[in-house]
Image (cartoon, rainbow, N blue to C red; front, side, top):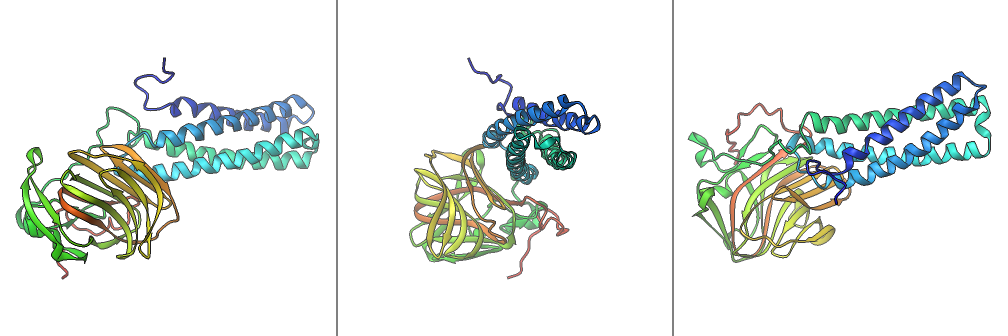
Length: 367
C-alpha cells in the first residue's frame, strides 16, 4: 500500500511542514531560554528541537528534489521553482552546520555562557529567516500558480497568426520571446538567423491531422541551426514535433555563441540529453533513454544553473551547470529525413524582454 494518497502529487507537502514547525519552535524555546537564564530545561529543549528540525530539513530537501521533478509548471512558476530549490539547499547547508555546532556547544557545556548563547541564538534567527523565505516561495508556487494542484491545466497552446502576420513567420510575443506557428513553407527562414547548410533543407507544408497544416523540414545535408533574432537570458522553449521519419537529433539550443558553442536539450529516437557544446565537443549534464513515437510536446528550460527537459509534461532530464549568461535561442537539426513542426515558442522566465510594448502577433522585419 502506498503511503502517498492518490490526490497528492508527491510526499513533499506532507513532510515539509514538520521541519518548519520544529525549527520555529526551537527558535521560540531558545528565546525563552535567553530570557529565563536560570532554567536549563529551555536550553536543552532548544538544542533537541534544532537537531530534530535539522533532520527534518534533510527529509524536506530530499523529497523536495524529487517533487520538483514530478510536476509540470506554468511558465511564470519556473523561475520561482529554481529559487525555491536553491533556497532549499541553503537551508539544508545552514542547519546541517548550525545543528552540529549547537550539539557540540551543548556537549562541551559551552552554551551556558551568556555571550556564547546569545550569539548562537542570533545565528539561529538568521536561519529561521532563511526558512521563512524558502517556505514563502513554496507557498507561492502552490497558491499563486497551482503547482502540484491537479485541477490546474498547464498544456501549451499556440494559435496561428492571422491578418498581416499570417505571412510573417516567427513573431514576438508578450512573454519576452518568440512564437512560430508555421502557415507557409518558406516562413521558417523569416525573422531568423540560419546557420549551416540551408541548401540541404527542403521545407513544405503537410497535413498534421488534428493539428492542421504543419511544417515539414526534410534534411539531406549538414546540420542547420535556426535562431530567433533576439538574445535571451532565462528561457523556456516549447515545441510540438513528430520525429517518426527523422534519423538524427533535434536540439533545442539556448545561449548560442556560434555554431560550435551553445547549450542544448536534445531529442533523438533513443535518448533525451542536456549539456553544452564547447568548440564542437559535447559535454553532457544529463542523459536519459527516451523513444518517441508520433507527436510529442516538448519543453526545455534553461534558468541560471538549472536545466530541465520535458516530454508531454513529464520531466525526462534535469541537469545542472554554470550560468550560461545571454544568447540567442532556437532549434538545431542534425540528421536525415523529415521533422514535422507544429509550433515553436520561447518565453522569458524572469521578465527579460517583456517590456517591449509589442502586441502579440506583431512581426519584426529588420532584415
